[in-house]
Amino acid sequence: MIHVYVGPTLPASEPLLASPGLRVLPPARHGDLFDTAIGGGDTVVLVDGVYHQAPALRHKEILAAMGRGVRVIGAASIGALRAAELAPYGMLGVGSVYSAYVSGEIDGDDEVAVGQAPDGEFGALTWPLVNLRYVLGLAVSTGVLNDDRAAGLLESLRAVYYPQRTWAAVRAVCRRQGETEFADWLAGQREQDRHFGDLKRTDALDAVQTALAGTTAATDEAAVVPGWETAYFRRWSNAAVRERVDGLELSTEDRVIYQQVFDPGFRERWAAYLEHLSRLPADGGPGLPLAERLARACGGDLTADRVFHPRPDLRDEQTVALLLAGETADDRCAVARYADALAWARRSRPGFSTAAVRDEVARDLLLRVWRCPEEEVDAEASARGLVRAASAVDAAKRLVPGFLEETEKRTEAAHGGR
Image (cartoon, rainbow, N blue to C red; front, side, top):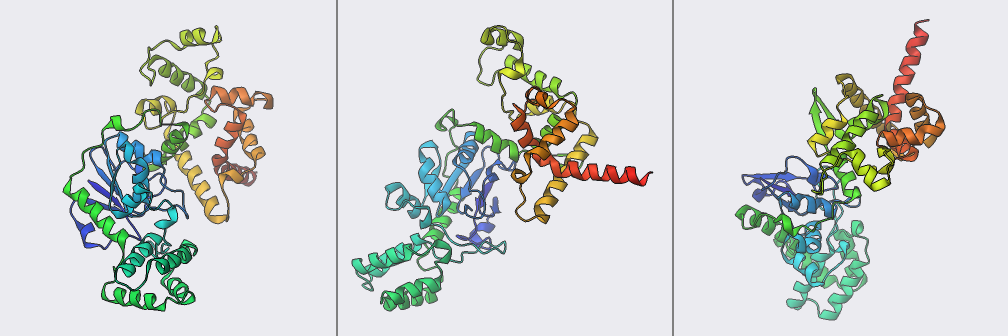
Protein backbone atom coordinates (compact mmCIF):
# COMPACT_ATOMS: atom_id res chain seq x y z
CA MET A 1 0.00 0.00 0.00
CA ILE A 2 1.18 3.53 -0.83
CA HIS A 3 0.04 6.27 1.56
CA VAL A 4 0.22 9.74 -0.01
CA TYR A 5 -0.04 12.91 2.12
CA VAL A 6 -1.09 15.76 -0.16
CA GLY A 7 -3.19 18.90 -0.09
CA PRO A 8 -2.28 22.27 -1.57
CA THR A 9 0.42 20.85 -3.88
CA LEU A 10 -1.77 18.16 -5.43
CA PRO A 11 -5.55 18.05 -5.05
CA ALA A 12 -7.10 14.71 -4.13
CA SER A 13 -8.89 14.85 -7.51
CA GLU A 14 -5.57 14.55 -9.40
CA PRO A 15 -6.05 11.59 -11.82
CA LEU A 16 -2.73 9.97 -10.85
CA LEU A 17 -3.96 9.71 -7.27
CA ALA A 18 -6.75 7.39 -8.43
CA SER A 19 -4.16 4.70 -9.25
CA PRO A 20 -4.78 1.30 -7.61
CA GLY A 21 -2.95 0.76 -4.36
CA LEU A 22 -2.87 4.45 -3.37
CA ARG A 23 -4.37 5.75 -0.14
CA VAL A 24 -4.75 9.52 -0.36
CA LEU A 25 -4.55 11.42 2.94
CA PRO A 26 -4.68 15.10 4.00
CA PRO A 27 -1.49 17.06 4.71
CA ALA A 28 0.56 15.24 7.36
CA ARG A 29 0.70 16.44 10.93
CA HIS A 30 2.27 15.29 14.17
CA GLY A 31 1.14 11.75 14.99
CA ASP A 32 -0.02 10.69 11.52
CA LEU A 33 2.75 8.14 10.92
CA PHE A 34 1.71 6.23 14.05
CA ASP A 35 -1.34 5.15 12.01
CA THR A 36 -1.61 1.36 12.40
CA ALA A 37 -2.75 1.14 8.77
CA ILE A 38 0.85 1.93 7.74
CA GLY A 39 2.73 -1.35 7.97
CA GLY A 40 6.16 -2.73 7.15
CA GLY A 41 6.70 -2.97 3.40
CA ASP A 42 4.32 -0.04 2.72
CA THR A 43 5.42 3.24 1.16
CA VAL A 44 4.68 6.72 2.47
CA VAL A 45 4.88 9.61 0.01
CA LEU A 46 5.18 12.78 2.05
CA VAL A 47 4.35 15.86 0.01
CA ASP A 48 2.30 18.30 2.08
CA GLY A 49 2.06 18.89 5.80
CA VAL A 50 0.83 21.40 8.33
CA TYR A 51 2.98 23.33 10.77
CA HIS A 52 1.24 26.63 11.41
CA GLN A 53 -2.27 25.56 12.38
CA ALA A 54 -1.22 22.28 14.08
CA PRO A 55 2.01 20.63 15.29
CA ALA A 56 4.20 19.53 12.37
CA LEU A 57 5.32 16.00 11.60
CA ARG A 58 8.47 15.34 13.61
CA HIS A 59 11.67 13.84 12.23
CA LYS A 60 11.63 11.02 14.76
CA GLU A 61 8.17 9.93 13.63
CA ILE A 62 9.65 9.41 10.17
CA LEU A 63 12.64 7.56 11.63
CA ALA A 64 10.24 5.30 13.55
CA ALA A 65 8.30 4.47 10.37
CA MET A 66 11.51 3.68 8.49
CA GLY A 67 12.71 1.63 11.44
CA ARG A 68 9.75 -0.70 11.08
CA GLY A 69 10.36 -1.20 7.36
CA VAL A 70 8.23 1.55 5.79
CA ARG A 71 9.64 3.23 2.66
CA VAL A 72 9.40 7.02 2.99
CA ILE A 73 9.65 9.32 -0.04
CA GLY A 74 9.63 13.10 0.29
CA ALA A 75 9.11 15.78 -2.34
CA ALA A 76 7.84 19.24 -3.23
CA SER A 77 6.95 20.74 0.13
CA ILE A 78 7.58 19.63 3.72
CA GLY A 79 8.38 16.25 2.14
CA ALA A 80 11.37 17.75 0.34
CA LEU A 81 12.52 19.54 3.47
CA ARG A 82 12.31 16.42 5.66
CA ALA A 83 13.96 14.28 2.97
CA ALA A 84 16.92 16.66 2.76
CA GLU A 85 17.32 16.42 6.54
CA LEU A 86 16.85 12.65 6.78
CA ALA A 87 18.49 11.38 3.58
CA PRO A 88 21.49 10.02 5.59
CA TYR A 89 19.05 7.80 7.50
CA GLY A 90 17.24 6.28 4.53
CA MET A 91 14.54 8.75 3.46
CA LEU A 92 14.38 9.17 -0.33
CA GLY A 93 14.08 12.68 -1.77
CA VAL A 94 12.66 13.31 -5.25
CA GLY A 95 12.61 16.40 -7.47
CA SER A 96 14.05 19.85 -7.93
CA VAL A 97 12.90 21.31 -4.61
CA TYR A 98 14.57 18.47 -2.72
CA SER A 99 17.78 18.95 -4.73
CA ALA A 100 17.75 22.69 -3.99
CA TYR A 101 17.52 22.03 -0.26
CA VAL A 102 20.34 19.45 -0.41
CA SER A 103 22.62 21.76 -2.40
CA GLY A 104 21.96 24.71 -0.09
CA GLU A 105 20.43 26.81 -2.86
CA ILE A 106 17.43 27.23 -0.57
CA ASP A 107 17.18 26.61 3.16
CA GLY A 108 14.07 28.26 4.59
CA ASP A 109 10.74 26.66 5.45
CA ASP A 110 9.05 29.67 3.84
CA GLU A 111 10.31 28.57 0.42
CA VAL A 112 7.58 25.93 0.23
CA ALA A 113 4.96 27.30 2.66
CA VAL A 114 1.52 28.26 1.37
CA GLY A 115 -1.77 29.32 2.87
CA GLN A 116 -4.26 26.45 2.79
CA ALA A 117 -8.03 26.67 2.26
CA PRO A 118 -9.90 25.79 5.49
CA ASP A 119 -12.63 23.86 3.65
CA GLY A 120 -11.19 20.37 3.94
CA GLU A 121 -9.90 20.46 0.35
CA PHE A 122 -6.62 22.10 1.45
CA GLY A 123 -6.21 24.04 -1.81
CA ALA A 124 -3.31 26.53 -2.05
CA LEU A 125 -4.37 30.14 -1.52
CA THR A 126 -0.92 31.67 -2.00
CA TRP A 127 2.24 31.30 -4.06
CA PRO A 128 5.21 29.47 -2.54
CA LEU A 129 8.51 31.28 -2.87
CA VAL A 130 10.15 28.30 -4.57
CA ASN A 131 7.65 28.55 -7.47
CA LEU A 132 8.17 32.31 -7.75
CA ARG A 133 11.92 31.78 -7.80
CA TYR A 134 11.42 29.30 -10.66
CA VAL A 135 9.18 31.55 -12.79
CA LEU A 136 11.56 34.46 -12.29
CA GLY A 137 14.30 32.23 -13.68
CA LEU A 138 12.10 31.38 -16.67
CA ALA A 139 11.46 35.10 -17.23
CA VAL A 140 15.19 35.77 -17.28
CA SER A 141 15.78 32.94 -19.75
CA THR A 142 13.14 34.38 -22.13
CA GLY A 143 14.41 37.98 -21.86
CA VAL A 144 11.43 39.38 -19.94
CA LEU A 145 13.72 40.26 -17.00
CA ASN A 146 17.44 40.55 -16.45
CA ASP A 147 19.26 38.98 -13.49
CA ASP A 148 19.32 42.13 -11.35
CA ARG A 149 15.62 42.92 -11.80
CA ALA A 150 14.67 39.29 -11.08
CA ALA A 151 16.79 39.30 -7.91
CA GLY A 152 15.14 42.52 -6.75
CA LEU A 153 11.66 41.13 -7.33
CA LEU A 154 12.54 37.92 -5.50
CA GLU A 155 13.68 39.84 -2.41
CA SER A 156 10.52 41.94 -2.42
CA LEU A 157 8.32 38.85 -2.78
CA ARG A 158 10.25 37.08 -0.02
CA ALA A 159 9.41 39.99 2.29
CA VAL A 160 5.69 39.26 1.92
CA TYR A 161 4.49 36.98 4.74
CA TYR A 162 3.68 33.60 3.15
CA PRO A 163 -0.08 33.50 3.99
CA GLN A 164 -0.40 36.91 2.27
CA ARG A 165 1.56 36.02 -0.87
CA THR A 166 -1.53 35.81 -3.09
CA TRP A 167 -1.61 36.44 -6.84
CA ALA A 168 -2.98 39.93 -6.06
CA ALA A 169 -0.01 40.52 -3.74
CA VAL A 170 2.42 39.34 -6.43
CA ARG A 171 0.92 41.80 -8.93
CA ALA A 172 1.02 44.61 -6.36
CA VAL A 173 4.74 44.02 -5.71
CA CYS A 174 5.39 44.02 -9.48
CA ARG A 175 3.51 47.32 -9.93
CA ARG A 176 5.37 48.94 -7.04
CA GLN A 177 8.70 48.00 -8.61
CA GLY A 178 7.69 48.97 -12.12
CA GLU A 179 7.67 45.36 -13.35
CA THR A 180 4.17 45.22 -14.82
CA GLU A 181 5.62 43.65 -17.98
CA PHE A 182 6.66 40.62 -15.95
CA ALA A 183 3.26 40.44 -14.20
CA ASP A 184 1.45 40.60 -17.56
CA TRP A 185 3.77 37.95 -19.03
CA LEU A 186 3.16 35.65 -16.05
CA ALA A 187 -0.61 36.17 -16.24
CA GLY A 188 -0.54 35.26 -19.93
CA GLN A 189 1.46 32.11 -19.27
CA ARG A 190 -1.01 31.09 -16.55
CA GLU A 191 -3.95 31.60 -18.90
CA GLN A 192 -2.39 29.15 -21.35
CA ASP A 193 -1.37 26.66 -18.65
CA ARG A 194 -2.85 26.95 -15.15
CA HIS A 195 0.05 24.87 -13.82
CA PHE A 196 2.71 27.09 -15.38
CA GLY A 197 5.74 27.41 -13.12
CA ASP A 198 4.35 25.02 -10.53
CA LEU A 199 7.60 23.30 -9.63
CA LYS A 200 6.11 21.76 -6.51
CA ARG A 201 3.36 20.04 -8.49
CA THR A 202 5.88 18.54 -10.92
CA ASP A 203 7.96 17.18 -8.06
CA ALA A 204 4.92 15.74 -6.29
CA LEU A 205 3.82 13.88 -9.41
CA ASP A 206 7.35 12.53 -9.83
CA ALA A 207 7.33 11.26 -6.24
CA VAL A 208 4.02 9.44 -6.69
CA GLN A 209 5.28 7.93 -9.96
CA THR A 210 8.44 6.80 -8.18
CA ALA A 211 6.36 5.07 -5.51
CA LEU A 212 4.11 3.43 -8.10
CA ALA A 213 7.14 2.19 -10.03
CA GLY A 214 8.37 0.47 -6.87
CA THR A 215 11.96 1.48 -7.54
CA THR A 216 12.74 2.25 -3.90
CA ALA A 217 14.24 -0.45 -1.77
CA ALA A 218 12.79 -1.17 1.65
CA THR A 219 14.45 0.90 4.36
CA ASP A 220 17.25 -0.97 6.08
CA GLU A 221 16.72 -0.79 9.83
CA ALA A 222 20.49 -0.41 10.24
CA ALA A 223 20.26 2.91 8.41
CA VAL A 224 18.23 4.36 11.28
CA VAL A 225 20.65 5.66 13.86
CA PRO A 226 20.29 3.84 17.23
CA GLY A 227 19.35 5.67 20.39
CA TRP A 228 17.00 8.18 18.75
CA GLU A 229 13.90 6.90 20.57
CA THR A 230 13.86 9.49 23.34
CA ALA A 231 11.38 10.10 26.16
CA TYR A 232 9.70 12.69 23.95
CA PHE A 233 9.16 10.16 21.18
CA ARG A 234 7.79 7.64 23.70
CA ARG A 235 5.31 10.28 24.86
CA TRP A 236 4.16 10.96 21.29
CA SER A 237 3.83 7.28 20.42
CA ASN A 238 1.92 6.52 23.62
CA ALA A 239 -0.54 9.32 22.87
CA ALA A 240 -1.20 7.83 19.43
CA VAL A 241 -2.05 4.27 20.54
CA ARG A 242 -5.78 3.54 20.34
CA GLU A 243 -7.75 0.32 20.46
CA ARG A 244 -11.33 -0.73 19.91
CA VAL A 245 -12.57 -2.56 23.03
CA ASP A 246 -16.17 -3.49 23.87
CA GLY A 247 -17.28 -1.43 20.88
CA LEU A 248 -15.48 1.67 22.20
CA GLU A 249 -12.58 3.46 20.48
CA LEU A 250 -10.33 4.24 23.43
CA SER A 251 -6.91 5.79 23.96
CA THR A 252 -4.66 3.24 25.64
CA GLU A 253 -2.88 6.06 27.45
CA ASP A 254 -6.21 7.28 28.88
CA ARG A 255 -6.99 3.76 30.05
CA VAL A 256 -3.64 3.41 31.83
CA ILE A 257 -3.88 6.82 33.50
CA TYR A 258 -7.40 6.02 34.66
CA GLN A 259 -6.07 2.83 36.29
CA GLN A 260 -3.11 4.65 37.82
CA VAL A 261 -5.46 7.09 39.49
CA PHE A 262 -8.54 5.01 40.30
CA ASP A 263 -7.46 1.35 40.62
CA PRO A 264 -6.81 0.60 44.33
CA GLY A 265 -4.58 -2.30 43.29
CA PHE A 266 -2.44 -0.45 40.79
CA ARG A 267 0.55 -0.47 43.14
CA GLU A 268 0.73 -4.24 42.55
CA ARG A 269 0.30 -3.82 38.79
CA TRP A 270 3.21 -1.36 38.67
CA ALA A 271 5.41 -3.63 40.78
CA ALA A 272 4.66 -6.53 38.41
CA TYR A 273 5.58 -4.31 35.44
CA LEU A 274 8.92 -3.37 37.03
CA GLU A 275 9.61 -7.05 37.72
CA HIS A 276 8.90 -7.81 34.06
CA LEU A 277 11.34 -5.10 32.91
CA SER A 278 14.03 -6.39 35.26
CA ARG A 279 13.75 -9.98 34.06
CA LEU A 280 13.44 -9.06 30.35
CA PRO A 281 15.48 -5.86 29.81
CA ALA A 282 14.66 -4.00 26.60
CA ASP A 283 18.37 -3.52 25.87
CA GLY A 284 18.93 -7.28 25.71
CA GLY A 285 21.04 -7.35 28.85
CA PRO A 286 20.92 -10.15 31.42
CA GLY A 287 17.63 -10.63 33.23
CA LEU A 288 17.56 -10.53 37.02
CA PRO A 289 14.86 -10.66 39.69
CA LEU A 290 14.01 -7.09 40.58
CA ALA A 291 15.07 -7.44 44.22
CA GLU A 292 18.50 -8.71 43.21
CA ARG A 293 18.96 -5.95 40.62
CA LEU A 294 18.03 -3.27 43.14
CA ALA A 295 20.26 -4.77 45.80
CA ARG A 296 23.21 -4.62 43.41
CA ALA A 297 22.44 -1.12 42.19
CA CYS A 298 21.29 0.54 45.38
CA GLY A 299 23.12 -1.15 48.19
CA GLY A 300 20.10 -3.03 49.45
CA ASP A 301 17.41 -0.36 48.93
CA LEU A 302 14.52 -2.51 47.73
CA THR A 303 11.99 0.31 47.27
CA ALA A 304 11.66 -0.28 43.53
CA ASP A 305 9.28 2.52 42.71
CA ARG A 306 11.62 5.08 44.32
CA VAL A 307 14.62 3.93 42.30
CA PHE A 308 13.50 4.24 38.68
CA HIS A 309 10.41 5.30 36.78
CA PRO A 310 10.46 3.96 33.22
CA ARG A 311 8.00 5.41 30.73
CA PRO A 312 5.99 2.40 29.51
CA ASP A 313 5.86 1.66 25.80
CA LEU A 314 2.15 1.31 25.14
CA ARG A 315 2.85 -0.16 21.70
CA ASP A 316 4.01 -3.30 23.53
CA GLU A 317 1.15 -5.76 24.10
CA GLN A 318 2.68 -7.38 27.19
CA THR A 319 3.24 -4.00 28.83
CA VAL A 320 -0.38 -3.04 28.24
CA ALA A 321 -1.59 -6.42 29.51
CA LEU A 322 0.36 -5.99 32.77
CA LEU A 323 -0.73 -2.41 33.37
CA LEU A 324 -4.39 -3.06 32.56
CA ALA A 325 -4.64 -6.41 34.34
CA GLY A 326 -7.17 -4.97 36.79
CA GLU A 327 -9.29 -3.11 34.23
CA THR A 328 -13.01 -3.92 34.10
CA ALA A 329 -15.69 -3.27 31.51
CA ASP A 330 -17.06 -0.55 33.81
CA ASP A 331 -13.62 1.07 33.84
CA ARG A 332 -13.56 1.20 30.05
CA CYS A 333 -17.00 2.81 29.99
CA ALA A 334 -15.75 5.37 32.52
CA VAL A 335 -12.70 6.12 30.35
CA ALA A 336 -15.04 6.81 27.42
CA ARG A 337 -17.20 9.11 29.58
CA TYR A 338 -14.18 11.00 30.85
CA ALA A 339 -12.84 11.41 27.30
CA ASP A 340 -16.23 12.76 26.19
CA ALA A 341 -16.29 15.21 29.10
CA LEU A 342 -12.80 16.43 28.22
CA ALA A 343 -13.75 16.82 24.55
CA TRP A 344 -16.89 18.75 25.55
CA ALA A 345 -14.85 21.09 27.76
CA ARG A 346 -12.52 21.80 24.84
CA ARG A 347 -15.43 22.51 22.48
CA SER A 348 -17.54 24.59 24.84
CA ARG A 349 -14.84 26.70 26.52
CA PRO A 350 -12.71 28.72 24.09
CA GLY A 351 -9.05 28.41 24.98
CA PHE A 352 -9.57 25.49 27.36
CA SER A 353 -6.72 23.01 27.72
CA THR A 354 -5.72 20.49 30.35
CA ALA A 355 -2.78 22.76 31.22
CA ALA A 356 -5.33 25.43 32.19
CA VAL A 357 -6.83 23.20 34.91
CA ARG A 358 -5.68 24.52 38.28
CA ASP A 359 -3.16 22.33 40.08
CA GLU A 360 -5.14 22.44 43.32
CA VAL A 361 -8.24 21.04 41.59
CA ALA A 362 -6.33 18.03 40.20
CA ARG A 363 -4.54 17.55 43.52
CA ASP A 364 -7.87 17.54 45.34
CA LEU A 365 -9.07 14.80 42.97
CA LEU A 366 -6.05 12.66 43.90
CA LEU A 367 -6.49 13.23 47.63
CA ARG A 368 -10.16 12.26 47.47
CA VAL A 369 -9.48 9.10 45.45
CA TRP A 370 -6.30 7.92 47.17
CA ARG A 371 -7.52 8.85 50.68
CA CYS A 372 -4.00 9.60 51.86
CA PRO A 373 -2.57 12.55 53.81
CA GLU A 374 -1.21 15.33 51.61
CA GLU A 375 2.34 14.65 52.74
CA GLU A 376 2.07 11.09 51.33
CA VAL A 377 0.96 12.04 47.80
CA ASP A 378 4.54 11.88 46.51
CA ALA A 379 5.00 8.32 47.76
CA GLU A 380 1.61 7.19 46.46
CA ALA A 381 2.28 8.73 43.04
CA SER A 382 5.67 7.02 42.86
CA ALA A 383 4.22 3.63 43.77
CA ARG A 384 1.66 4.02 40.95
CA GLY A 385 4.28 4.83 38.32
CA LEU A 386 3.43 8.55 38.27
CA VAL A 387 6.92 9.52 39.54
CA ARG A 388 5.97 12.26 42.00
CA ALA A 389 3.05 14.42 43.11
CA ALA A 390 3.61 17.11 40.46
CA SER A 391 3.57 14.54 37.64
CA ALA A 392 0.48 12.87 39.09
CA VAL A 393 -1.28 16.24 39.21
CA ASP A 394 -0.44 16.87 35.53
CA ALA A 395 -1.72 13.40 34.56
CA ALA A 396 -4.93 13.82 36.56
CA LYS A 397 -5.85 17.11 34.88
CA ARG A 398 -7.35 15.28 31.90
CA LEU A 399 -9.67 13.47 34.34
CA VAL A 400 -10.94 16.60 36.09
CA PRO A 401 -13.88 17.49 33.76
CA GLY A 402 -15.25 13.93 33.90
CA PHE A 403 -14.67 13.62 37.65
CA LEU A 404 -16.45 16.92 38.37
CA GLU A 405 -19.32 15.93 36.08
CA GLU A 406 -19.80 12.60 37.87
CA THR A 407 -19.47 14.23 41.30
CA GLU A 408 -22.17 16.73 40.36
CA LYS A 409 -24.49 13.96 39.17
CA ARG A 410 -23.97 11.99 42.39
CA THR A 411 -24.72 15.11 44.43
CA GLU A 412 -27.90 15.81 42.46
CA ALA A 413 -29.01 12.19 42.85
CA ALA A 414 -28.38 12.32 46.61
CA HIS A 415 -30.38 15.53 47.00
CA GLY A 416 -33.16 14.18 44.86
CA GLY A 417 -33.40 11.10 47.02
CA ARG A 418 -34.02 13.01 50.25
